[in-house]
Length: 84
Length: 362
Ligand code: SF4
Image (cartoon, rainbow over all chains, first blue to last red; front, side, top):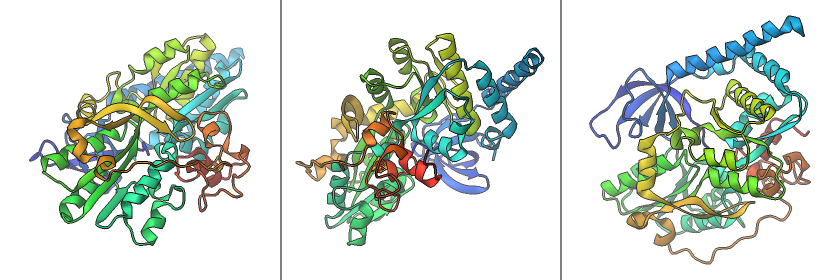
């Protein structure tokens, strides 16, 4: 129900700000999505789409940072391993 | 797919499960609130990767599952009126009412349609000016902005034939209800990432400190979920109870302010009855007086609807995390996705359907 899927904005129709429709690609499948709640979104960015509406712009920097944090968990493990 | 594949990566999953094993010294019970996470956990077998003592219980986060029977009966009654097109999300159409479900109503002549977005229902109203188009609007905070936007668009376009039957529910009051109940098995929570994408997570801060329960805002892919569990268990081990955000690629502390503004414009907080949990004060959204014209409840003057929940169904205990689906005597026998007795067997996000589908009986 609260499923939201990341897709890449291909093009934006700016003619109506309340609708602000965009064509969004989900792994190649194109769908019409409203960007009315993500006024900052631009073509090429990824948005999380739920029920035909983008609810956020995916933050690429934060995404990369988290994956780095995970590497730290792995590094910690390797450091501890010999002692165990 | 970008932002999906990297969160299903085996090595990362292994790093997290090993990390979790390393930090766990005692038993912990964590509840995932969101049905989408329940589905992913059972599908990917994440609960089987956890160290002994760490267990997951499934929360009430499936809006379809918590919609009370009488509301489904109401939707069916509206659909059966002449000149009405009733639309909703697919899952909603198969939830059993007192006698039939919406698909049953469709089979006997009612115009019931599945839509992907409430904005499609608005388009349908525009296309069929001679029909009353009613959108059965269920959902948590995640879905509220789309539903609010549909109402605002209908108003702007001057559509007189569009209305909402609202069954909107809010997550934080349900979490409080679970934590405050005398029998509470839950020590920490994974908060629903998409609800928080819209609302942010300031609402959860007082809950974490009041009940001394860590709450980790968590995404939906295996790596997200394991990371959420890792952060939650780490807090439990350290005796902390803070709100942490694992789903930083989508969630900020403040959330989506445009989305919150349109929710506030259209809806107000009301008491709401939850299937299995009963009425919870200030736990739902209903249309504001300014938008009363779009309220299907008022337009169709539906009163006097009460319905009994199926006696055999233990959905209430499942939604509170007290029992698992296979502990229900009807599970897989009298109750299956083809013939569901209760809502958790209908929606793919319901715990019972997830257990049934992925053949998990223990
Ligand atoms: S298995 Fe069916 S009857 Fe039992 S709790 Fe789940 S939905 Fe209800």
